Length: 445
Image 1 (tube, rainbow, N blue to C red):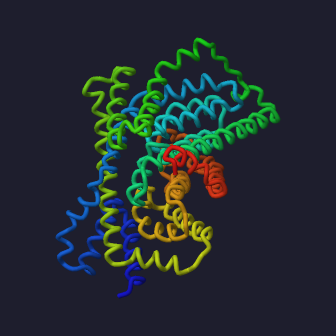
Image 2: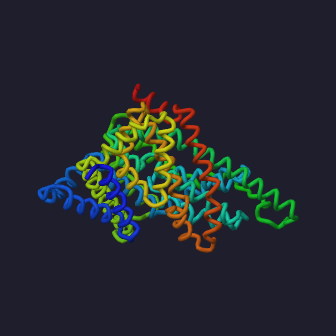
Image 3: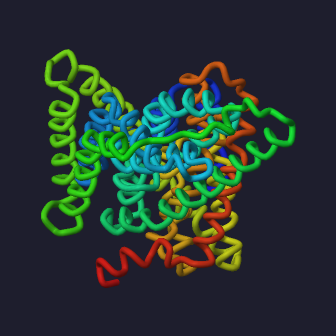
């Protein structure tokens, strides 16, 4: 049987198992094991555990549970609500300042926690009720939080970027730095949209004579109130800065930096919020263990899945077939990104990266694309998968924390942000220096 037939069978079996409702990790492991049993030597089954272990025995992957610990410590505390309150106090004079504060809070919290669902939950729990109380429409409020949460896979320390660094064999430090410029760009785009949308809703309220609308109310914060909001926020911002300085100043490796961040986050939560008892640490450690186990299972089974693809020459043949099409480099990029968007309808970013990397990276490398730059573009494209239906994870997180907002409103509320993400991809293609300038300057490349 040729590689084409094997590849079609492999893909059909994968989607069949996934649509059957089997969890992703076990679905990928099951398909890989069945194809090993049928199409590979019997002795290959004896090496399943060894192959999974060898693929996962990476010092880079060690950073994942440590960064998850850091994110869990911050996410289970009131850091998100305090961060949002402080930004709101300082930005209230900006038109739509409440929405802008939520965007900035999502960006900062995503950089501290490294998790999109955690960002949505932590900022949205405080931000959505407050925006609704101030007259923001349900879809607008939900869209801001859902889109802001996507920054968790782009801004360092991003767990998804760690996996891309492993799959593409690229520098994790350069990838982290490359995500900062596009991350800031997206924060600016989201904040600008929040200002324009607020002005539109305020104008409509005036045109319809709704003078009692909360959108028209003025807020005032004294200097004392503004300054009093900072003491609980600054330690976490200093933590974020310190971790980045330790990593890029050459004082610690990525794994050491992740461990340092986890320990310091636990210490800050204990000092700032008094969470030093075992029953208070319990939820943080439980969340870390649960999410780490889930991710490592997906990683292990995805790597086994990729190993079987490689052994059966499916990935190599697919890559060669793509190269043989002689597509122009931009048509090739567009086709690959379209495939990533479609896969985002069904799969989380972790699985997309590990399943597609053996196929798409060789043609991109042959076409002369910088894989650090492409990694950032891929992160931005996968952000759409977190907020577009039918399986936008952040949409369902929003429904969980704001069940009174109809799902239809949430979906329509996030669609303008999908357009802004597409605009960001276009800008990255036109001006690649947005992503590559900072790592090039730091690493002298």
